[in-house]
Length: 219
Image (cartoon, rainbow, N blue to C red; front, side, top):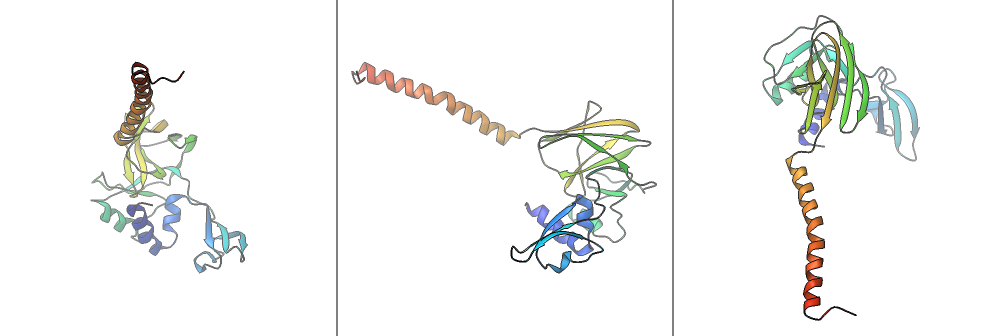
């Protein structure tokens, strides 16, 4: 995990189950006997084994990993975002923290459901219908290389809740596509590999020609 991810989980661990609610975690593989996961009001035990040292629990009513929110909390940077996320007054069920915004919007309604139509590692498609403009929040990692389209039109991907991806949506039917394309470094590796793949046969052919011209070719 990146340092950002470790800091995020470390800070949010101090405010109960907020990290679990923001990420949509449904199952937890925990050390057997860990007191953090023994509360029956917070977790439902599914399986455990003392000899193996493992306990599997279910998080009741997990937060959907894709949803449209209408409350916005702006943050001036990473630290400010973490401060808001750990603020007791922050409502993860209705609000999202965006570092690219300077306008606060008070949530007037609960989240709207969003449905994953396609869910591949490099291509995620989501459909939702909203009665007013909102922010689609996807609890998948924010990273360079992702692009987004809303109803076929390119749109900016926003950094949501410090770790996740989000896009602005208009009112009505919305089909959102997130597509991952390798960055310049990975593309350069592909080109380098392709170059070597073409160069090796050329080197072998050149060596064979030299041996033939010097009479070194085996009969």
